[in-house]
Image (cartoon, rainbow, N blue to C red; front, side):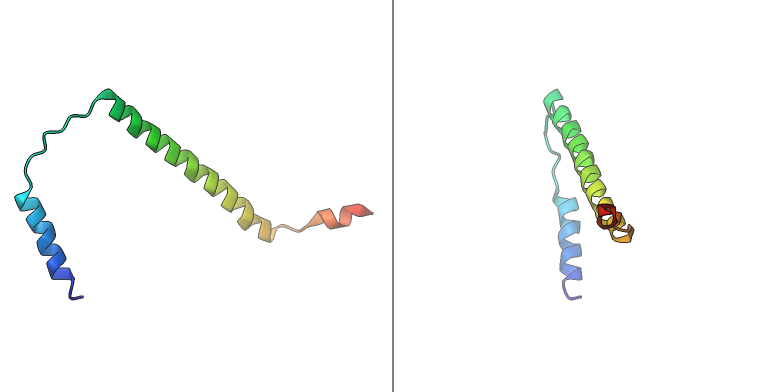
Length: 69
């Protein structure tokens, strides 16, 4: 709890003392950001699929052992 005030002061000073940035974003930067978002969504979808099969696998009955007859 003792770190709350210094952190708030640092954030406030960051806003007060910040100067305007002279930055340039070209078309390649936008393309890179789009690829980053699409790749992140695809990665999350894959992890979600794998985890969904693991979670639902716990509740499924294992009928493969009884198919030997």
